[in-house]
Amino acid sequence: MLGRVYDSALAPSGINVTQFAVMKCISRRHGEPLARIAEELEMDRTSLYRAIAPMVRDGWITLAPGTDSRSRSAVVTRKGLRVLAKAATQWEQIQNHLIGTFGKSDWSAMVKALHRLGECAESAGVR
Image (cartoon, rainbow, N blue to C red; front, side):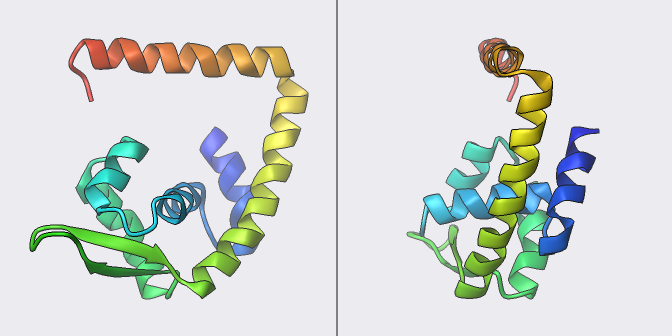
């Protein structure tokens, strides 16, 4: 349900919440191998490649060879940066609305609990 709320808020920019997260990560990790991008996003590489394919097609991201013959990296293009900037404004608006409605202390507690749950999953060998 939350994904739909964010997707709806981001729709005017032509991007969905997964694409937004991927592009933000790529822009922060300029030139990093896609394997590291997938790891940071807690996605498998196949899912990441599926997610970025339409962004490459639309000219938001370009792919380049990585540090070895088996790796690739990605860079957000100028067109992608414009899409990302527009989406960031929309994301911030819905994020502020949700936090304000849910309550800042409840939001913080939820985020803390989710991080703890992730750590528990990692300690169980689940990735």
